[in-house]
Image 1: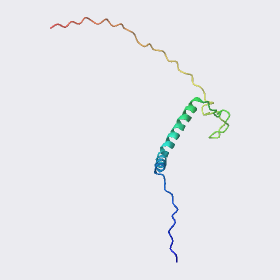
Image 2 (image 1 turned 180 degrees about the horizontal axis):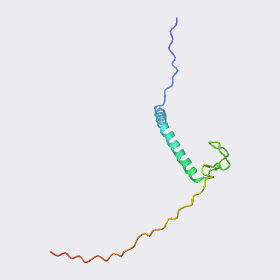
Image 3 (image 1 turned 90 degrees about the vertical axis):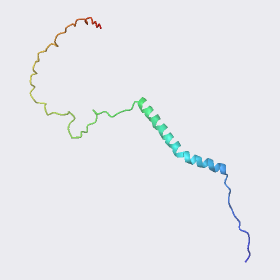
Image 4 (image 1 turned 90 degrees about the horizontal axis):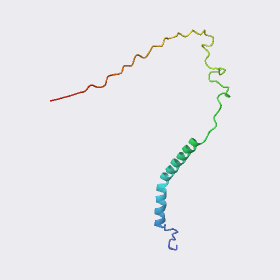
Length: 107
């Protein structure tokens, strides 16, 4: 049996590159959060300045309760009662107050 030296295949890492990579990985969540915040702000600005098309409610023939869309008809055939006329009452009278009397305080 012959004994020969052990061959090691390895690589020595550059420590400056390793520290840069680690700092980038540490900052990655913060950068992603900042990016998401910026995107949300831009979307909010765009949504306040753009016109969006909305569904026309009058064209929508579906009703939650199955009606025909005319609304509440419970008082439709009810006889109208004449409104009572109320007499307008005045607001009262306006009186002009006299000017402030002269105040003299002597000791």
